[in-house]
Amino acid sequence: MTQTPPPIPPEGVPETAARVLRIEAEALLTLAGALPGDFPAVVERILETPGRVILSGIGKSGHIARKIAATLSSTGTPAHFIHAGEASHGDLGAITGADLVIALSNSGETTELGDLIAHTRRFGIVLVALCGRPGSTLAMAADLRLILPPAPEACSMGLAPTTSTTMALALGDALAVALMERRGFEPEHFRTFHPGGRLGARLARVGQLMRGGDDLPLVARDTPMAETLLVMTQKGFGTAAVVQDGRLAGVITDGDLRRNMTGLMTRTAGEVATRSPLTAPPEMLAAEAVALMNARKITLLVVTDPEGRPLGLLHIHDCLRAGVH
Image (cartoon, rainbow, N blue to C red; front, side):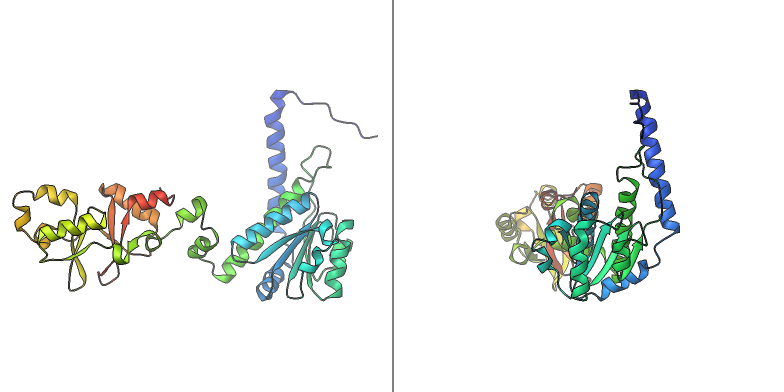
């Protein structure tokens, strides 16, 4: 009869936490040194898959499968989670011959996966087993196998899925990153899949946040200041971009107006403008532009192309509204 360990006192909690982390960390190092032999083949088969990657499992494995599916989808690999139990009640119809299935089960004997396994065999759908037993029903039925190395569960009774789920989750992350790097996935793609939240804001480019087109307050160098002031007021930026032959020749800000109050209305835009103003290319990260504005104690940048032609204006308030800090 298995004896239940006595409760630990409060002062023993940190030691327990440290023990669990050490056990799981050692298991991950073991996994890194004994990567499943089929791992490279799984990466290549996924790259060749015209449809989606279907992740399935139940219980704790189901939660891990759902997370792996989300990570794959957000990094450029179309993926979808199907609950192993729901698969038997109609959801198998969502899996097509163009898909690839990754089934998770530490024991490889999860009863609820039976119908899913049979479906993949019947229709010739590629099946990848992610499990801990190479001789299990799931592993033997699969086309490719991601077998986790033996490692003790961090649970003191060895019953709760802890180390096994950590290894499965980490292997899923390794799979997603390997696919990213094989595809040449770049930061701009992250912006596409993460348009909201802090990640999307961090990856936003100046060209995505700038105001352009008819919003640009453009004036020629010989434009009288009376007309220039009207443009600055109408466009609402308190700024005018001075151009010559289509290229940026200077910028007029409120500060320039204050410095040139004497005889202001007798001058032209080119005479008042600050020449060689600070600019930004449209491909610059918005976060870099904000850092630049903060460093120079300014609130606005003119966005220009490589030839110096004005494309837009980036105001720090637009960056802040977009979540860029």
